[in-house]
Amino acid sequence: MIELKLVAKDELVGGVPRPSRDATPRERRYYVWTVGCQMNVSDSERLEAALQGVGYAPADRPEDASFIVLNSCSVRASAEERIIGKLGELQRVKRELPDTRVVLWGCMVGPNNQSIFQARLPMVDHFVSPSAVDEVVALAPHSLYQLDQPALPVADLAHPPVSVHVPIQYGCNMSCAFCVIPLRRGKERSRPLGEIADEVRRIVARGAREITLLGQIVDSWGHDLPGRPDLADLLRAVHATPGLVRLRFLTSHPAWMTEKLIATMAELPRAQREINLPVQSGHDEMLKIMRRGYTVARYRDLIGKIRAAMPDIALTTDIIVGHPGEEREHFDGTRALIEEIGFDKVHIAAYSARPGTRAGAMEDDPALAVPEDEKQARRVELEQLQERIATARNARLLGQVVEILVEGEHRGKWRGRTPGNKLVFFADAHDWVGKLARIRVTHTGPWSLGGELVGEGTPA
Image (cartoon, rainbow, N blue to C red; front, side, top):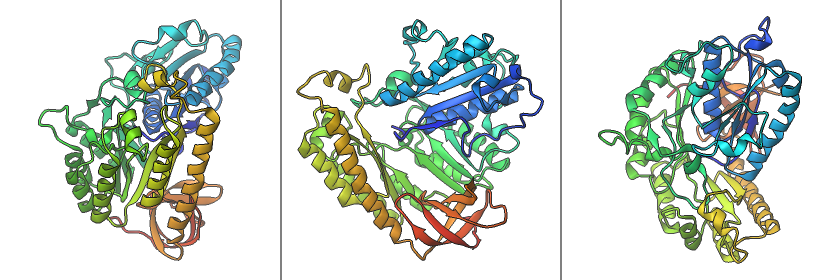
């Protein structure tokens, strides 16, 4: 499953470039609010590009737009609560400006659950399932857009962002006990290799420097296509794109991670040295309850093979604590695995029951449910552990020169990322957006690095 860390963005950082707001009337303005994972952010970027392609401009506030879209997430209850809260705010907008059209989009709206919201959310005019960009654009009141008319994709924007997420598959075929994504996004569908490669070529030709191939289970890509290509084949095809500087993929599943993929990644110079490989738990009994399809030994073996092929690899993972049935000994196994492997980053979530999932039914059993205060205590314990690990791992970079791809400015400093996806800040008077910079690290912390400019970097 894609990284569980939630984002909420009115202005998509590093996202679709926004045209001037000057002289654009309200009836041709849109407002998009996004909560969720990178797939949701990617969907919203595509929606914004399509809306701009049919004559709309963005608005800074919902009341300044005639078309409002909330891209929702159902991974945790807190994500849904944020959307419900935002819709509450929009009731006032609808009351004062009744011509406003509101769309609830994304994972809250599954294939068969639109009807359950209609009475509860009267401020919403339309409910649209995840990733259906064309359906949303067709609902814009003044777009003159038809469903059989191709919309402007991110690839065809005059100036795409420095780093672009390109979806390569939709949906998920896994049956993890805790996850609602297969119920909301449907069965896994891989996009054809040629279609993906062509989109990447057009995005890079217009100025993007980094591509992240995105999928719910990205390393399972291609198994449903003729000839059964795999992610290693796709990496090679995209890697050959003229002008591409960096290539990433997100998010992998241990059950689909192959030696071929590891070897291919190690061989390709533009493939960045970072892998997100969610383990979710460090105890075999919990992995079985979660229906993850691998053991701790299998996971350790994969980590060993990855580090043998790429000693400089940055490893990140996802952990769920407080899953129904998790005993203290299970949690201690997770803690021990985190200490043993020494991840660069760990995304830790306290279990949140999701309707329709196997674990959601388990949560109703008092003998299996973990008390909320215990869930949060375990989450904090692991977060403190990981902060110590990340602090130590990043401290090894002090005094070294790292190469970053500069994405933009943040509070008066340039912001970029290393091949291992570590965030680095530096100050300089020149414009560095989209360029590679060599930075000597002068400050380290658990979540970011600071440094001084040494010079311009060289593409691989």
